[in-house]
Image (tube, rainbow, N blue to C red; front, side, top):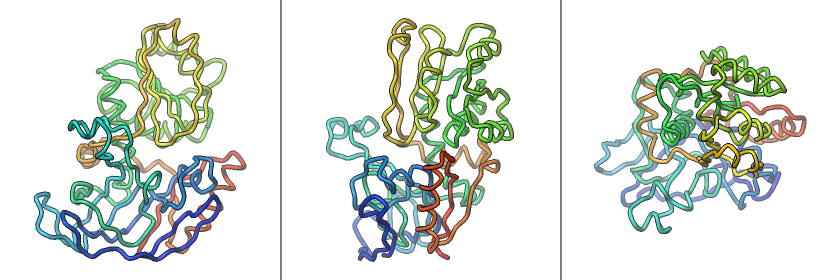
Length: 340
């Protein structure tokens, strides 16, 4: 196996390791495409305080190159999605048969090796066959959609109700699109005009700037009632007070995202409004549902700004992404062709 590994902040090097050809209840996958995101850049520059060494890359698909008979129906030459999130099997929740409540989830490219490598061996239950109706690019967004499903489930979003989504980046956009699919009404809020424009092109009708007029505009949309459900995307960089002040009394607020950055919340007004908080960091066990939703055209990713790159371009992707972050520029997702 060859790949790219972070050994320290700003220290990205190409490595070679031996991967076993066979293992019980496991398959060998040739990684064909990996999507790098802004979260990978924060691992590169040390902002996310990772434990090095670490192979980055959370989102990936591949082709099965070696598989024994198994109950999952996965065979050689199948195109598969690899779930980046898996339970630890050691915490209390896991030992009592509730892995969805795991205390210490393993996440590829965050606290365990990711997919920025040519070959890897995985358990059968972490790989999912991809139907022909799901393109390679769509498949790379399965984990985003899985997170969105967790948000919908946790908030118990109901048909026709308004849901404010603070953060118009890829995560917020996909959450808003899924809210529409379930026949509720999202209100995307951001301070980035480009993200708001992408949201409009994605079919999201209500898009608002996070400024001094926000509370009044949300009140106008909701008939003065304010949203009963609010989603705050942890990577959006917008002041969390916006989530509190636009919430209805007794509303539910979900803090959703992949990263572990410190998010500060002023509880004074939240306690006055008697708000309920949830924290959602992954979409564990939602991969199969996500694949079905994509196959049924529940989301549209054609409006996203996606760049393409080759395996040899990876060092420059990280350098350019870090430079963008230093200049306050949002880092676009990059799809790396691992066969190039």
